Length: 236
Length: 176
Image (cartoon, rainbow over all chains, first blue to last red; front, side):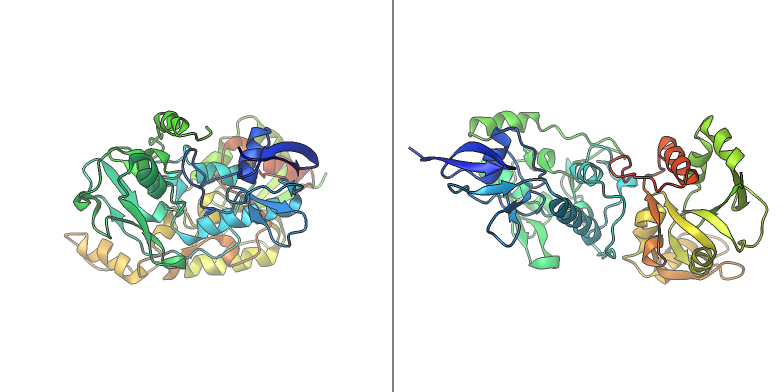
């Protein structure tokens, strides 16, 4: 039986259990913490840094999705400083790849675009990297466009942990990190892929999309995923 | 009341932002009464005037001509507004940036056509290496993203600027 503990979130005392993350406890208490890479029912990786929070006594900001609660912990989820750093995280994501919302299949249905709006990002203060990246159109039904990828690894986790196929992985390091398929082969040649499409539906941007859609048309159908992951004990 | 001197500029964009500016319905009447449009595609002025209160820039900075224009604009404008995604993010014009400009021109004007092959050079400004957002070249005072920005956002922003306030567009506008 996990031990019951008590922490403070934005000054309020909240009951929690040992082993829970700050994000889980905050959500259960009705607190909103922005997330992008977090996906219900899969492991948390702290990739996007949007869920950063202040923990008193700790000098740096911690991701709420991967930080376990401790008895007596005092957490701040909203502050001027956090908004600043969350905006910076979003701006880095935009500057790293070639996100052109106006011509994207996921325009108006994109979690990155929506999060930028929600956080009040109206421009990117860092120079854009304009990397030269490929698009994998080999799969008969789906497309992988690296230009729109934010390396959240939702596809990697849903494929490994929910579908059990482990087609996706991350190759390279730092700015050279790329999502790869079956030891870096074209998607169509990935013999472990079951063509289930879970990766496509949970992708927050237009990086993974179904073929045959034009600008604005790719609405992700993640409700089936929500059902599946809820059965695995995930929060939806 | 003294009229506000307003300039609009069309760099590497599709003019959609200017269309959106004209699409603000009856709000344009109130704004028109209070501004003098001193430069831009909507009026005849050939040279950028020396004292401008507000300049709206549509489009990315993509050519040598754009580059010279934005420096002139900054020099003579009190407030510079980046209007629309091309001016704010580079948007579609910046999609050429991961390829050399010369290769792109050859692909279009030499490999891509059957007759009159050749990259145009007479009467057209040289392309810069990359098409970049305005704020990578000059200081921008306000960003209004959108492709195009919603007429309501433009009307709101102009309304606030005419009242002497800096509009707070956070969460009111979006990319794309």
